[in-house]
Image 1 (spheres, rainbow, N blue to C red):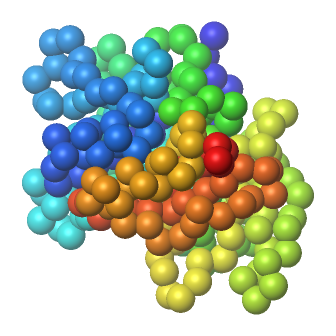
Image 2 (spheres, rainbow, N blue to C red):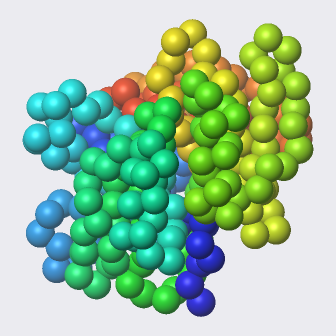
Amino acid sequence: MRNVHGDFIWYELMTSNPDAAATFYGAVVGWGSHAFAGDTTGYRAFSANGTDVAGLLRTPAEAEAGGARPSWFGYVGVDDVDKAAADIVAGGGTQYVPPTDIPGVGRFAMLTDPQGATFYVMRGEPDETSKAFDPASAGHCQWNELSTSDPAAALSFYTSRFGWTKGDTMPMGEMGDYQFIDHHGGMIGALTKATNGMPSAWLYYFGVEDIDKAAQAVTENGGEIHFGPDRVPTGGYIIVASDPQGAMFGAVGPRRE
């Protein structure tokens, strides 16, 4: 059965060195990687226990020339890509890639919200349910976090387009509120105020079996930890890190010691 409108259905890493990235995330998250049969573009999938959960590709030359840096992107499933893209632009967003078909895969568009955070919308061609986002499974994305220059405007923007709803709020002192986001009966992430002049951006947290081993693997394989390991209200632990090419990501999991 197809995912409902507003679900996160895929995650994708654009990077300057796909081979090195595949090795790094294999060590940190435990992913395998493979090419798709018949593909000639170099696109690969990251897999967790036999389930494809994310994609991996080299940053296109024209994007790199325009200043694009290695980054993770999320895909939000929609019922109608053209309608969703037009609505996002009408609401103050920017369209980077217009609605485009990938034969056998689906139709997608790359956009930003009004504050500049980049994401994709997509309608997959297969009717299979994506399990790329699964808060209960290691190797899958477990949390979607938006840091934004205008939390109130961002909340209104996303809830009105994707059916997301405002969840609980956790006060963070001078940092403002950490606003949880619910969708289709479950919590999918949160949004918070961007600090220190940082640009608005999404950060994706991938589940790991052991947060301390994941943190050790980050540093041993050329990445950098910017925060953590630190306990979160759900009871697990997180780190925020960058891979050797500079793409930011999060990891979440238990402490086994």
